[in-house]
Amino acid sequence: MLNSEPNWEWYRTFLHVLETGSLSAAGRAMGLTQPTVGRHIDSLEAVLGLKLFTRSFDGFAPTDAAHELRPYAAGIAATAAAMRRVASGHGSGVRGTVRVSASEVIGVEVLPPILTALRDAHPELEIELVLSNQVDDLLRREADIAVRMFRPEQEALVAQRVGGIELGLHAHHSYLAARGVPESLDELSGFTLIGFDQESAYIRRLQEQFQAFSRDSLAFRADSDLAQLGAIRAGFGIGVCQSALAARDKRLVRILQHQFSMTMDTWVAMHEDLRGSARCAVTFAALASGLHAYVQGA
Image (cartoon, rainbow, N blue to C red; front, top):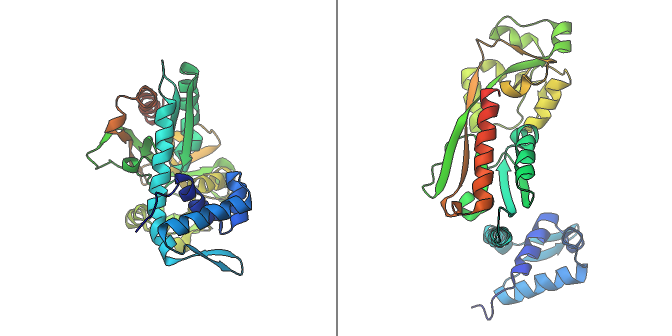
């Protein structure tokens, strides 16, 4: 039975210690002293009546209780951050902070000019961009707006489809000049291929359609789409990337266009409770418009 309500800051400290594995590292990340971090953990343990960490030879090891509490603490932290973003948006005009979640390639290669134009139009708007291939939970407000490569199913979300982003096989012209150009998918086995490391649902779908892309056939493996794109641009070999993105770089050449093509359905989504938020409404509209133009090659 809890004797008092834990301080929200203690949960934040708890998460940092979980992530870093030590009081000193957590303190550096949070801008707090090690004794302060220790007091936060001691206080949280006392209020909850649980042992959250045990000291090990290389730092602080979380207990089973800590692992079980982690998602709830993360939810509290996300809610607190969302409250700060909502508060920042109050006042006249479009202002405040909007947290946007997008995949690595979209976040790095596509969104910056869209967000720059948005900021130019609304100078009091601040953007937090989360680069992740994981799906942030909009229902728990881990992000205000998300760019997703599938149709969101939750009823509490407002979602708009911006189009299908085509994927194709591409290589640097210098690689093709040195190695030649494959005439068919069957010939890919004789070329240097770039692709995934760990298997996912998308990767299994890719393998079912195009058997040449088995893990063992790949000479460069990375789960980071940016790393794969970097390898293609460096002339390492042949890989999959967004056709609209490759078209911006004259050094990249698309191959086997009629034999290899995939489409990623692309959506912009946010929680329906944010409809009335000026900061979120203008950001949602800018992302939807900008991404649609990108898909169309504009």
